[in-house]
Length: 288
Image (cartoon, rainbow, N blue to C red; front, side, top):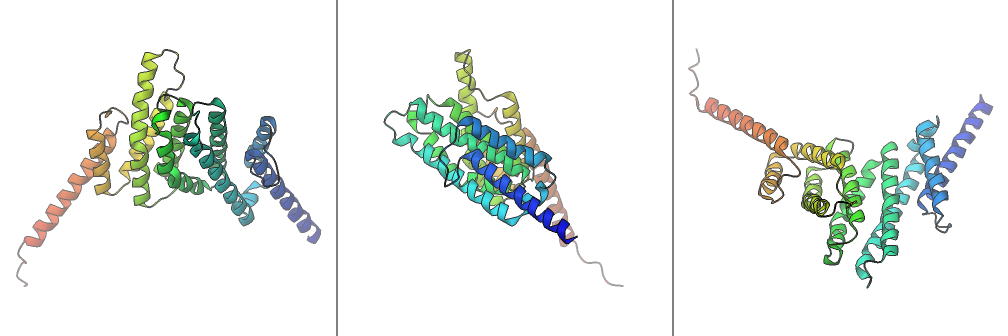
């Protein structure tokens, strides 16, 4: 038994080391390594994906506190790298330089892969928290006037990433306080609404315009937002729905379902309140 136990512990330690090495290679964030070629990065990502799906020891590995700590450090590094690459955009004199856009897209690709990985590791809350923290600054950069007519691929990819965050929060994978959910919605909803309108207009004027918000993406975002709004306190729902109704691009996202739910709940609450007030105003029957 002692020998078997030692063998199992050794195998588990080996699996942990392989997993950590692979996830570091996959995102090129190891302190002692230079950036890797795409084929090596792809191989490392495939190794991590294989282990998460098929390795029988992986539940013990991802439950290990050391793995969680190391993974969170990697997540922070990837977000830091992405922010640095993104903020460098507005400092460049030649903002339309394709090499700069390529570097930003590579960092964003790392984030997207890590997002999918964290979902399988039950660590999605870490990703959502980081994304929420950088959202305001991120939008300040991407809405710079010099980017108005360029980098459409980057803009759509950011919306795809936000969709993943909305999904996680809207469907209960990640639980956030109500104020954080409200802030997340109020930060991204105007931009998503604007980009949907602009990309549709570009698609109408340019038949080969490749950066449309797909129907699947649009529906996914819409469903997650409805779920998010419907789970908020009534006053917060009212604020968001009022903004939606007054928006010029009111057709998207369609929050009619969330509005109907809010109306029904509001009427039900008012009816219960009226009934309670009526009962409290009734004279007490004389005691027998």
